[in-house]
Image (tube, rainbow, N blue to C red):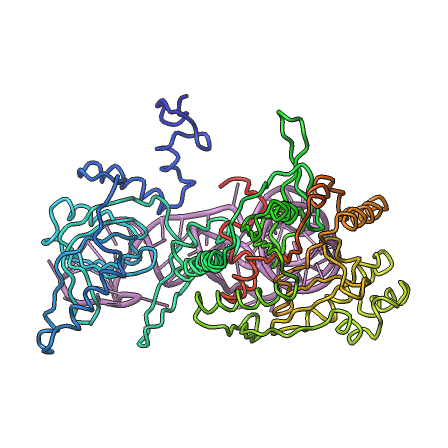
Length: 536
RNA sequence: GACCGGGUAGCUCAGCUGGCAGAGCAACUGACUUUUAAUCAGUAGGUCGUGGGUUCGACUCCCACCCCGGUCACCA
């Protein structure tokens, strides 16, 4: 292929140009053109702009801690001033650069830390002095030198050699950072565009330490939960994401096709039915942390692809699962965040157990004045209309019950509470309530007005389960697209015997939102779903 | 899907009642060897989301569309 502009041969054209012409084009912002031009200058000066490796002795935080420990060990104040730590090798991105002519101060940033370095032209080797002229904000460099404290009091590496690790060709959207007297960091004109921050999460993470912190918390939450469950003899398992029949929840699936089998496959909407098959298989206690997919709307609390923790616990009923839930969530919060008290969307909550228990029907009757079992459909419709549901006429009984409950009860629950014993028709996978089969042994854990956990005493009677599936099928035939499929294989598994089992599903994204105070799921998902860009 | 708000330089934003497209940061040139939102002098940088319309003249007013955010609806 030939570049139409310079006539040189090229493997491919980017916007109709070879890469050197593309980077030099007036269509590129000036900072990009300048940075591309610096690549050639670097190579001329004998500097490879994209290195293969760098052997660092310390992270930035570790180097800082080492120096401070040495300083603390000095006895005399006079000694403290002259404390110097032997050379370290550290690496990071250039976050700031103050060029004073013969020398320059820069801050480097890595995953967790930030450290100032001082580059003096007469101290760094010749190649490094040439390199100093060609550095930009965002570049990755590695430096070596002793650590001292400047007259202005900042711990600083006196650079004796510097190596370019990776040249950035595109300017990162750094703000200007001001560090106040109290050590608080104020960023001026940072990276604010929410869409760009989600699409280019790499840039968001690179310039916003608090975003990195959010995802560090997320990672710690996941591993703390694994540890908590592993300690209690739960077995982590992996079940199919691609399924010939979806189930375990009520939602629209994503569908795809397997060519060899010539079979429609679905991305799972829940793990539930496979995990309970494992309990049939004597695995006793299992859990899975994985992605579920629901082909529905995208908003502040819904991403089509989200992370669910499901666990199943043989010989336990839903009351045991309530205890497990409140203990696990509060233990994990305490371990990861050091507290059980959180503020979320202006609401203050305490996750310390025990959580409040609220009987579903009592809360419903208190809020609506209606008995959820005795009230007829028209009364429910009238009540729903009174709460502002204009489409009440089109809703099924289950939808009416649920919408009234969500609008009038769930929104009002701030401190964590277990809402339990839902009407049986809302819970096709749960055992009937002991002594009152109009209800199911089911609970939802509600915090800050949203559902965090959904759990049951699992239905282990294959005859009852098949009948419930059949009732779902009738709803489906009547046009309810969200009603469940009959899963004959699952019923077969139940026929082999599911011991009494308690189980739950918890939205991991929502738990992380709660712990980090984020009110949008986009802020706790690294790459949230967005409409594809036309051109990057 | 409905309503509201937004889309202007690489980033963050201003732009009034229609009259030459602006600032700070980043970039570039120069000065400066302990600075830290470094400083000082200068330079350059634009398809004002897209397409129509009104007008002598549109970033600005009108219409349609696209994208983002919020609220509501949907998602029990």
